[in-house]
Amino acid sequence: MLKSTTKTGGTTFIPAVFALMTLLLCSGCNGNKDYTGDYPELYTAAIHSIPGNQGYDEHPEFFYSSTVEILDEDDYERVLFVYCEYKIYAVLVCQKAEGDYAYFYPDYNFIAASKQKGPGMPEDYFTGDEIEALKEINDWNMEPDESKYISVRITTTKSNGPVKDKTVMEFYTEILGSDVSTRTRSGVKYLTTDEYGRSIYLGYGTYGSSRVVALLFDPDGTYDAKNGVMEMTRDDLYDCQDRLKEFKKVNGWNTP
Image 1: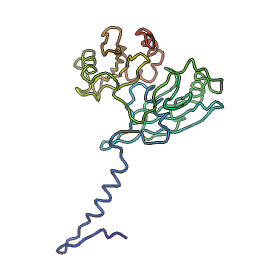
Image 2 (image 1 turned 45 degrees about the vertical axis):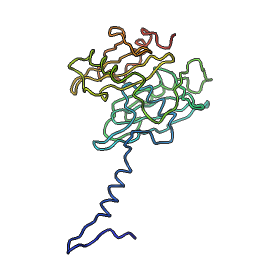
Image 3 (image 1 turned 90 degrees about the horizontal axis):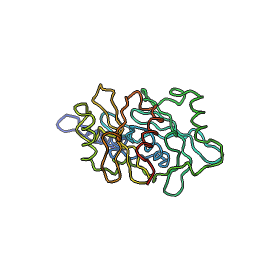
């Protein structure tokens, strides 16, 4: 057994115990915000689908890996799974993982909600009908239709996206003005990039403000302050699939 105390001049010290406790506490955190679980392909599908996700969980002092749990698998190896981080609880469908890529349907491969205290269970957030509808729109137990797939390279780290931070912040502050939540990049979350290099980011208003904006950048990092912005509220964030799909269409998403 390790001796955990030493005595000097009648005073008891416990440096070994203190050091060990500190080590154990820090070993439970993930300072670099990487995903450390068993399903990086599912993690990848989630972070490129759910608006406003940050890609990790957090505590006031530490960062932790997001939680990914498999709920079901169909006859064609589609996976129904939970993704959970600091403020998001979501259920998603991933069509398949092959080689270095995760494959899923765009826009309608998830349902999400604001996470309450503790991770909870799917039935705490969604009805059985909502989960069945998610399966249905993602062709659960039907022959695969690869024409509907989009693919993303599997990762364990949430990217800041391809656009330079300076450009992202320029667009963000131009749209929100004094309502920006922060002057640092932390106020804007990267979402995804299409096959031709267009990218979408989500920017938040100040604490207490309900404003959220989707910002779209062209492949060269330029942006259109009229058509490249979609305004919404925090309450709309997890129910914006139709609007986000239309926003992409207006901006030529996934077209040359």
